[in-house]
Length: 440
Image 1 (cartoon, one colour):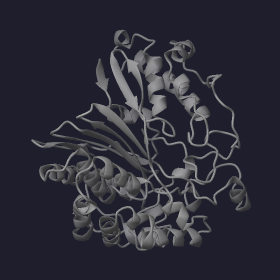
Image 2 (cartoon, helix red, strand yellow):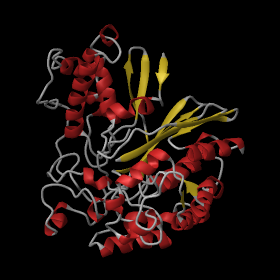
Image 3 (cartoon, rainbow, N blue to C red):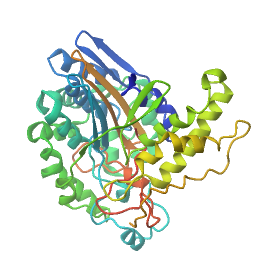
C-alpha cells in the first residue's frame, strides 16, 4: 500500500490551515544536493539545512538548522517564541515518530483570574494572557537527542551568523513585515527589535538581530536550559510581570514536549498520517474520509462540484474538531471514532451536492467522556539514508503576542488565544493545559 506520510501538510496547507487576514502564500525554496533535500519558505534557511547535510548531519540536524534560520529571517511566522510539531520517518526501521512540542498555559492563568481582569467572554488575541510556554527549543532538544547527530553549537551556527552579520530581506517577507508596522510599534521592545527607525525593512535591506544571536548562543552553550532557565527565562518572567501576567519560572523549567503516536486513515489506496490532538490533524483525516464517499475523479480536478464537496467536508470535520478536540492529557478525546470510516459514511449523507450547508452540527459521539474542566511555516528535510522530517512551526498570528522579552530578540507566541472560556469543554482554559492547535 502506498504511504503518504509526510507530504500532506505541505500539499494541503492552504486548504486545511486557518489563515489570518495578513497571511500571504509563501514561495517555496528547495535545495537539492547529493546529500539530501531541504525545502523551506526562504532560501537562506534551505541552504543552512543543506550545508548541515553536506557536513555529515542527518535530516533532523538539517531541519533544526533550517528552522533556526527561518525564525530569524521570517519572524512574523515562526521563531523560538513559538511551538513546534514534527513527524520523523526513521528509514532503518520504517517507523514514524510524532513530536508534540506545543506549550502549556502558565499555572496561574485561570478563567477566574481573567474575569478579575475584566476578560469574560473571549480569550485575548494579543498580549500576555494569550501567551503559552514556547515549545520550539524543547522540541529541537528532544529531536536532536533521540535522532540527531550534531550538537546545538553546530546546528545554530548559521542562524547566529546571519543574526549577527545580517541578511537581505526578501520580497514576500518584506511585505508581511510592512503590514505589521502599527502592531510592532505598540510596544517598545518589539519596535526596537523588529523595526529600523520605525519602519519595516525594505526588499534587499540588511536586517540584524544581535539580541537573538545572544539568545541562540546561550542555547548553543547550555541546550534547552539556555532558554527555559537563566537569563532568557528571567526575561520572560520580567515582561510577564510588567503586563500583570502569571508566568513563574517553574512554568518554563518544568515544561516538557512529548513523543506521540501518529494517527492515520486511508484514502483510495494511500495511507495518510497526521499527529493526534491537541492539533487539528484529526480534521484533515476526517475530511479525507468524507471526501472518499464521493467520486471526485468523475467530477474533475478543482471543478465546482469537487470544491463544493471539499468545502462541505471541511465544515463537518471542523464542527467535530471544535467540539471534541483539546489537550488529551486533560480530556478523553474520541480519536478513533472521529476518524472512523463508519462515522464518515453517516456524516457524508449530510452533504447536499446542490447547495451549501449554512448550519453544521457536530457528531453525537457516544464514546465521548464528559469532563469538566497566523502565521506558520512548514518545512521538510530528507537525508541520503532516507530519513525524513516533516516540521511545522508557528507564532500563531503574525508576530504572535506582540511581546518581546527584554534583550532576547524573539517574539512570544499568542497560541493561548485559541482557548475557550466556556467551562467544561475539551479546549477550556486551564493551567498547564495546551490549547487546540490549528497547525498540522
